[in-house]
Length: 187
Image (cartoon, rainbow, N blue to C red):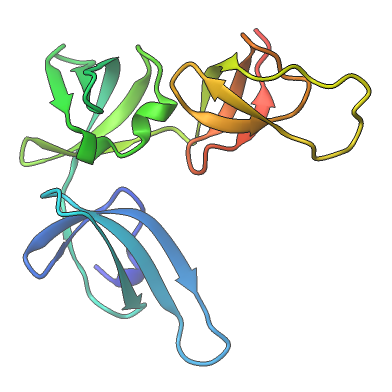
């Protein structure tokens, strides 16, 4: 496939090593040809790497099996236990595979786990998730300055900044891309 067809969540083979693309940016500098900057995580756990491709470069893709799985619980070591929604098999995913994904996942949250040759290689989160605020200072009455945010800790351990009107126990929607507050959730 051509390098300009690469998307996040795809697997590519570079120099005999399998990588999962986590982020991609198409850039057209003022001088010179356009290029694609890809941030990738090695499947073997050797870490993250960034690579720059020309749009016409050829990249060897790899097939990934996508399975809907439910997050059951955190194993206490930074990893988690997931259950396949079709056959109810349970899979342990290690910390190096999850990165900070558990900060966005409460128990019983559904996500997509990517497998290559029967082994889990990556996890895809939805673009936004709903979490509950567990600790945030009270809002200051009469503070009307716009764009004023305060620190908040959520039930999953995620720390984010929220508007002053958000109180403990409220559900909020946050972006999984950068952890930023999006909106209050009314039930």
